[in-house]
Length: 423
Ligand code: ZN
Image 1 (cartoon, rainbow, N blue to C red):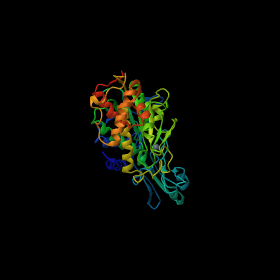
Image 2 (cartoon, rainbow, N blue to C red):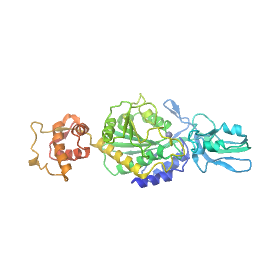
Image 3 (cartoon, rainbow, N blue to C red):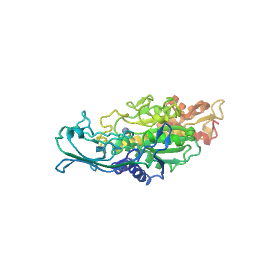
Image 4 (cartoon, helix red, strand yellow):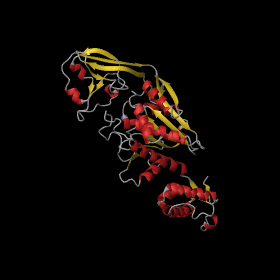
């Protein structure tokens, strides 16, 4: 799937009203199932998950505000951000003063509609532009929210690609936001694409993809899978990957795990890319990196969490992301995977003196002048540093040679019997 197809998938998913539970999540996962055979897991309301409890399920059919003359001034059908996500049902006539107590706006961005939620505190409300708010007149308003909040379940999706080893790479994205694109349809379409491409290969690692509601979803998954957590050797939370800003990588809590080193290595040549230290605020890395788990999981975004005016507003729409940006993010993720897969420690089987490469046909076996020079240098660097103490990533950093070329050179040296894997 290329950028345009990822973008078109975002277009399909955009209108669905998602939340942390409910049919919007199920509908979203059923669309994703057209691309990968996701397992859909339902966890009943009331289930204890770590320190939390699965809430009642929320579904909504209709919501609007009408004036006394019957004119609908706000309609959930036009934009699902208009409803305070998880609003309890309501149907009544109220005056302007009471209505205003249930309205949310963004005075600093008077044209935008905010995205607001109230998952754990029962209330009802509408989100509108501040411009509209300021033009409301005294009136006999009629409000309707046809929703229900009752025992049901929390739904999440999981997709596993078995590798040669049980050791796992985790990709996680949140699927609880309604019509918002960068946060996080971008993460969803990239994860689906990565999974559908990876399943065609025979990866060394086992790859696990989670499509979960934010916070409660990762807490639920961790609570149900404590036995599997130890297998996670690398992980990334994917979000905010469709806008045009430079990449930002937020380190895992441990700060020096392989995934931290790998992403930092791959971003080192991108001048405007930024590496951020871990902080306990943001996406689901908060849960994966809570001290009792402390997993090697970082978070990859373009503009970081909360640092763009479109964030959590009606401006995070289909114009805010594009297929080129999605493609660029995809290319980086493929590079991350290729370094994860290839980053092994090797042992030079002939460490006394340089082995004679010419007689083994190892020179002149790759095309292109610059590549040729790098390739020959790669052979020498790999042979010299493959003493069991240096990973291929260490060699890439020391030599400055592209990881792909080092991987090709490694394969040639393996074929010639000059390397063996460190056990
Ligand atoms: Zn968000």
